[in-house]
Image (tube, rainbow, N blue to C red; front, side, top):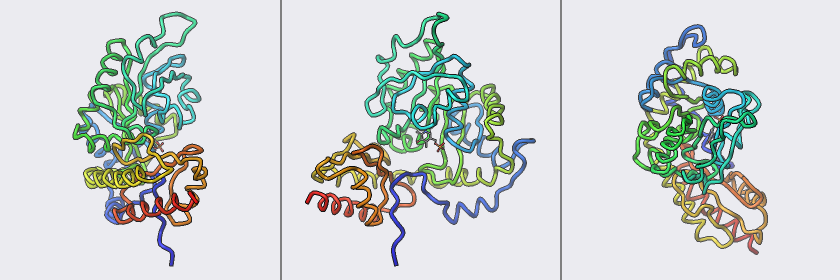
Length: 349
Ligand SMILES: *Cc1c(COP(=O)(O)O)cnc(C)c1O
């Protein structure tokens, strides 16, 4: 009998637990397009409350909440400023351009972290040759920055600068709960510096589907219109909102376990010849490491791990990403660590 693989490719691979499935089965539902669905309503109220926002709206994905945020903040011909490695710019098919006629101006950060001094001078002057700078987007935790938590003071500085210069602020908080658990700074404290915030339930929180966009009532009303336009109006969506509610009630505090498991992997990788952490500091549940070409390529390394039933994601020719989550326990992480050591040893020969 072969064991089930230890899947460290992403925290999106988690499957709903029996408890979550029971609350999904029992969910009260209604038509959330004609009127409202009671479970969706409960989720939206809870999220608005937790984030300290007036209102929030449930959508099928973080891509949709991010892209609708951009759409409600910007007009065609507007531009937003973001960090070069961010999800909105790299992994959403430039939907802001395809669907909303908006362009992006990227700034290189250090593993996803920008400093306010990099932004001065980027606001375009009022001139008919130019796009209009309208919005700043930040990401916390930063996915490509290996789950980096944005330093709180840097977020405050950037948001204050943006506000003082008449720019809107959106936070891609797909993994904001990881930042909350890692820092002890609560959701509303992070959120207060932004006009809109999106959070995901299908990452570390372990729900099957869903994301919420929170913000001022008037903007969220606009987001509801845009959601229908983008094909995101869902009928008896309480079925999936129930999974998100269950996740909020049961799976937030336990993210510390994922963070501790990521440290176990990071500590091991630091000791292995031919592997180097990138960045060296692991803040939350994402570990990225570089494979020295003397061991071969990242895909060769990942294939060798796969043969031992440990799955990893290749993110660049020499880079591998490991993500800890609800469906990998400490024992499996120990096993994964041993496999990584063994693979590095065998490829070095
Ligand atoms: C996963 C993710 C999203 C949203 O992805 P979906 O798959 O569309 O839900 C947005 N931002 C970041 C940083 C993410 O990691």
